[in-house]
Amino acid sequence: MANYSTNEFKGGLKVMLDGDPCNILENEFVKPGKGQAFNRVKLRNLITGRVWERTFKSGESLEGADVMDLDMEYLYTDGDMWHFMKTDGSFEQYAVDRKAIGDVEKWLKEQAVYTVTLWNDNAIAVSPPNFLELEVVETDPGLKGDTAQGGSKPATLSSGAVVRVPLFINQGEVLRIDTRSGEYVSRA
Amino acid sequence: MTPSPDDWQPSATRETLRQRARLLAAVRAFFAARDVLEVETPILGHAGSTDPHLDSLSLRATTPAGRETLWLQTSPEFHMKRLLAAGSGPIFQLARSFRDGEVGRRHNIEFTMLEWYRPGFSLAALIDECEALIRTLIPAAGAARRRRYRELFREALALDPFTTPLTELQRMAGERGGLDMADSDRDGCLDLLMSLVIEPTLGREGIDVVVDYPASQAALARKRVDEEGTEVASRFEIYLQGIELANGYDELTDAREQAARFQDDNRQRAALHKPAVDVDRRLIAALAHGMPAGSGVALGIDRLIQLALGKASVAEVMAFPTPRC
Image (cartoon, rainbow over all chains, first blue to last red; front, side):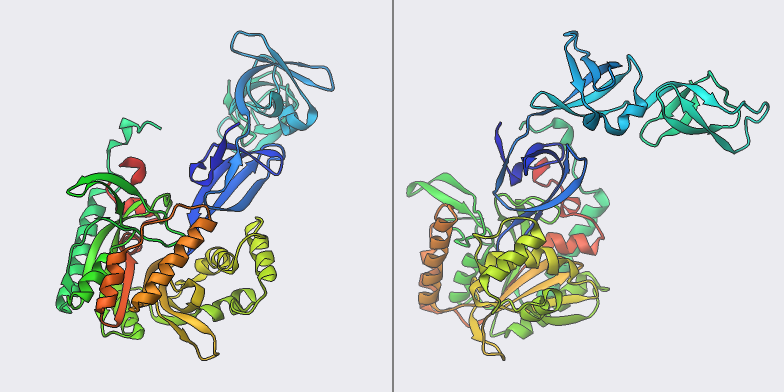
């Protein structure tokens, strides 16, 4: 991979730091009135998800990280690994381990398309689509006529996630959920 | 990278550009009232700045002497000092200046420097004038206080920047910045601590004027011995709202000392693997002829306008900052 100098750092650039691939979030050029310049850089470690703040001497460089975000369809899990397939028509499959799946496990739905982050061709992270349509598999019976008032109850969805839904929702209904906040949006 | 045609529009609003023009007119009126002459000096010169931490841009031009390398000036300092040596009296300039690689919220490769020189002024008198100018543009800037470089480090970091051993400075700077400073010199470590720890706290309750810098950071300022018997640079910097606005010197007028500092700069540049810069021999000749003793200051007018208008970056007060130029 190419090396990138601090003046090429910008949001979205993927670089290697301390052996881990990182995504640059912010790069600020700082310099005392006279004297040496530095860059204060915020990076997200793509393995741990942690945000790091590091300072570099201006002109220093970091090795680029071979990181790609690809659209992939979720196929199935064998219990140990989760299997995804590229949507580019190649039918190429990738197996994702528990560490890389992380919290996304509760948002998995067969045939839905996820963003899979590959580092050196290994899956290191999965992000769900912002909105998913999921069926309610368990909730208290709906309250008829209560369509306008507030109030909510927990509902278990087909993917395993538990979300708060309005009181009028029934088991078997398909709901639109915002996966970023884990909130109910509407009936699908 | 190919510039996107979608970025054709200015990054400053029409109202901001009107305000900018008003503030620049106020600067000119300020100096006219004080009988300081406005001058214009070249943006291109046969010599550049040797400062180890400034990167000059240069270009090849066809002149009566043939194909020559000319340098885009990092500030109008050298030409203005030649005017002083020629007997100009007090002068000011709003000068386009260029520093390669400097782009960020407070930096733009091409920017406007307000620089002025006051023959016969002490550093203290020039600091007073800077404060008056800042208050003209930002009436609510608050009271000014003098802050000694040494005291700032003692208060914020419990260390003496002049006597703390280098290994201890390297350890502290490395720890604060999260990087390896083992191969950095004293000034490199102090610069990092200043940038990361001290600067953000300056100018929060008014105008902070930092004085008595280490002698090794004198640049083009005279050196003197302070009350504690330490050699310091007769230099000041002004901070407002965490932003460095101005850098002033009790100007070095000794031609031989100036020539030695240029050479020392180029030695430092070589150690940093930076190209040598053509030394301004005409400036040295002007100093040898005789430049009146006095003080001078360079103020980043884009930053002052940014603060006066309550904007978040210099780009917001420029029509076309570097990414859109």
